Length: 210
Length: 157
Ligand SMILES: Nc1nc2c(ncn2[C@@H]2O[C@H](COP(=O)(O)OP(=O)(O)O)[C@@H](O)[C@H]2O)c(=O)[nH]1
Ligand SMILES: [Mg+2]
Image (tube, rainbow over all chains, first blue to last red; front, side, top):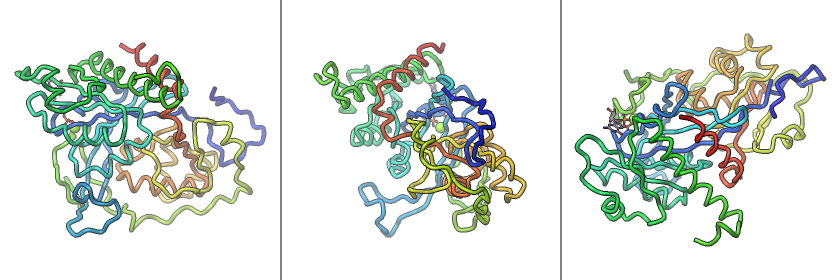
């Protein structure tokens, strides 16, 4: 599609040299140390990059713009990587800090995201509450990925679903963030949820019933 | 390892390293924006409508929202031709984006805070030195695009 060999048919100087690929993104969320960076590194075709965002945060539930006392500015780092799907499509994977006070950054990140993978450490289930809560509220398709750390087989998937009060429609997958196919398959499960959601919104009869 | 910014979680997300952000680059103290190009006219919307999945921002800033982290930045011919006239923060961007890069990649590779990179990129967009391609609003509803991502991922192993 992208014709990068544009002969000098009077192109205007401010035109880009070629049309870039369309970017789509997904998010990887979860508590500290749960494997977000590892997940991004495992699937990314480039060494993961880190970008820092400075943000003003306030208590949860407070209005974006409200100038409340106690509002603080922090710098958070997020890791990301990318996968080139083809010449005209790139997938970005953003690993986002999971603490609830980073909610404002999540809003920017979540806008336009196809879906999210919420990582859960079997031994510290409550660390992912904020992320699960957030994506539920946003209506963003997500899956829960249970990262089994050494000695972590404490709960089976049903118990985890119960403990997190996760809707039966939300898939829970067991995964190892260090293994490519494991991460890829978790992302594929998430993308199928995204596909279902898109089909439902498009009013496809075959997707409406559920 | 930090500069003037308070950092609550030193050591988190340490793959690739955390570096200090250039202290002189802040929203409040940024370099003089590049002058608008002397090139006669900025093209109108026809090119933009041909590129369906994008909102193309070229020489205008209809919206003042932050650029999406995944939005693609490409240096224009003007940007390449006049890079030497730009102050170096801008020149770095123009040099880097000869191949399309995401806003987040510009931020990471030039070690600019995301917000700073977003502001500088808006300046360069306005002056015609780069073009930014923002993902269209309907992209998450685009079944065809999602299927392409799924098929592409399935082929990787
Ligand atoms: N056993 C095991 N260890 C993991 C897994 N994922 C990550 N780790 C390790 O857990 C530590 C924290 O992972 P990291 O990706 O930095 O977590 P983050 O804070 O969420 O980015 C690292 O030492 C990883 O090697 C996993 O799936 N299984
Ligand atoms: Mg990390």
